[in-house]
Image (cartoon, rainbow over all chains, first blue to last red; front, side):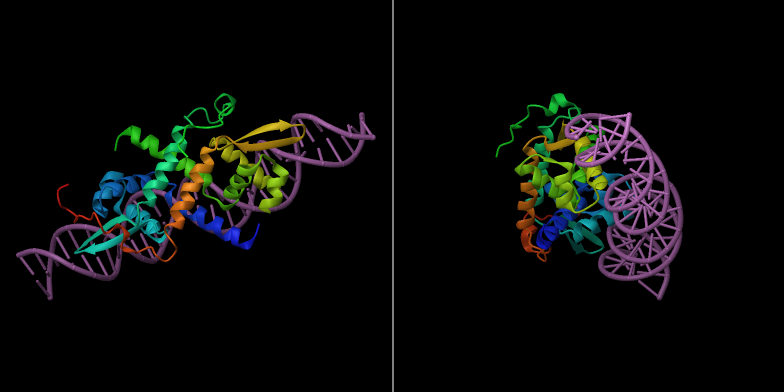
Length: 118
Length: 118
DNA sequence: AGTATTATTGGCGTGACGGCCAAGCATGTC
DNA sequence: GACATGCTTGGCCGTCACGCCAATAATACT
């Protein structure tokens, strides 16, 4: 493995990590529909506003979202629709691999194609 | 947010989490090409074999890979090509979002102001 | 049986993450 | 200026993930 590979994989992993949290996924889904301010997202997530603010901070650093100040509000939005696409792909992967079949040989056995358009 | 949503997002997040590690991504990429035993993967990753074994265990529980015993060997392979597809999508997302461009005008188009009825 | 090879599991230290509280900053309003 | 609103930051703490070591399977070979 080259040093370049290591760097590339590390970046990828960091991106995935910044997505790998239920609250963050919910936030992403909301931002797919429209930009939102922290308060709205907080209400939807149902956590402390400081927690949500930190989630947003992490996702911003990861380049997933951006913020724009509007008076006392911070309006967050997706940086690009690639995120939507990305999460859709993941969803597709999960649909094709129904829950419960994960550890069973039955579900895994002859599954060559999962019906995901490619 | 419904209870069902919570469950779905949690599952998604768990899947992403099981991918969000450089070594695991490398393993996935290797398994895309061919099934491998733990020793081969270990050599490529460059970590202790026990560490790699645990990574594989996690990914197996997540339903990403499966193993088949061959004598003293454990041959690991991808459960389905969806994984490949999934990671490709992620890669595409990253390509489209070059580092440093985090604040491009890309999302400025369907912007609505905060607090406006929607 | 005895030994070697391959892999898994348990345990532990370390470090990162997620959550809330308290405090601080920035902007808008009176 | 004084206060309210919206958000961010620092700090603390509990929990969890990662990594290696030691020990334990499980199978193959002689």
